[in-house]
Image 1 (spheres, rainbow, N blue to C red):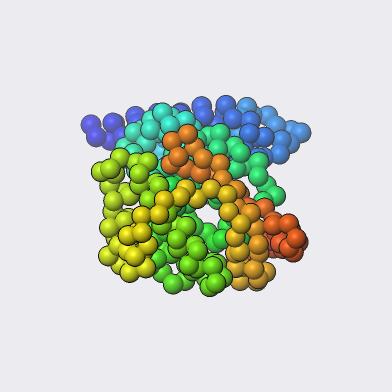
Image 2: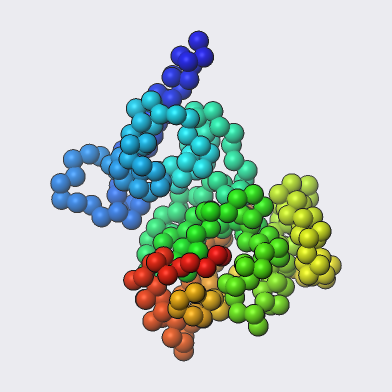
Length: 289
C-alpha cells in the first residue's frame, strides 16, 4: 500500500514539473531561443541546467520514477521553474518534504525578483535575506564573492561568518572592517524589529553572536539601527585585487529579501576589472568567502 501511495505522489510530482516547464519561454529565464525549437516552453535539459541537476536525474523526476528529491533540489527546481509561493509549497508537499523556513537558504524567491536577476547578465548580482543568507547568485556574483551555496548550518548567514570566521573578513580591506561591522549590526537590528519579536531565526542568530563575539555584543549594546541600502564599498578579489563598487539594493515588499547588484564606482579602474571578471569567471576565485 505504501509503495502505491509513493508511486502516485511521484507521478503527480513529475506531471506538475512537466506542466510548469512547458509554460516558461526560454527568454524568460535568460536562455537563447534556437531556430529549431519543437517543444513548448523549456527543454528538460534546460531545466536540469538551471537547477544544477543532471539531465538523467531530471528526466527520472518527470517520469515519476526518481528517488525522493532533496529539499535543496526542490528549492533549485522552484527557482528554475519560476514557481509562485503556492506552487512551491505544492511541490514540497508532493515530494513529502517539510516546507523550508522563510529565511533559510531554500526560502522562496519571488519570480519577478528572479527574472530581474536573470536579466542582470553583465554585473554581479544576488538575492539575500534580511539575515544575510544568500538565496541565489548569478555567475558574476559567484566569480566576485565566491559560491555561497556551499555553506551549511549557521554559516549560511554572512553576518554569522563575519563575526565568527576570520576568513570571511578577507572580502573587505582591513581598514573597512570596523565600518562593515557597525553596518551589519545596525542592519540586523532593523531586520529583527521588522520581524515578530519571537522570531526564532533572528533571536537565535543574535543570541549566538552575542555569546561568540565580543565585538558583536559591544556593537549590539549601542542600539544603532540603520537598514543597509545603497553602499559604496571596496571588495577584495584574490586575483584582480581591490574593486571599488556601488552596491545597489531592491527590497521585497516585506523587507525580508533584497536583490543586490554591483556596479563599478566612477573614477576607479573597477569597470575594467569587472569586464575581466566576466571573462575569467570563477577560474581565479579560489579564496574562501
